[in-house]
Image (cartoon, rainbow, N blue to C red):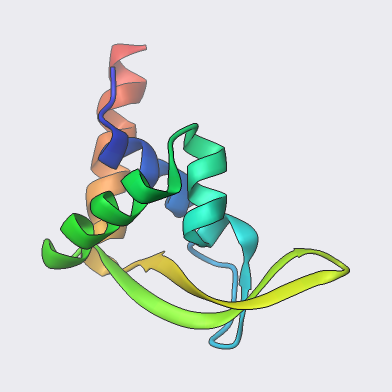
Length: 98
């Protein structure tokens, strides 16, 4: 069983190589994370503040692209190097358990 923070880390790991400074995938926004994990957006905000203070993510403000017709300037999140390394370790542990 994974924690919500671990679920967010695994979700954001899918986006490590996507997005640019000004155009980010919907899944990297608080709304996208909330939908993917199945939690309220307000809970995502709390998790992201904790992850930022732990040095796991960085915040990027950019246009969020949900589909070809929807684009909005939003706060988005990307795993930084520490977050990437910790997520890789988590995935290895989960793979061993499975």
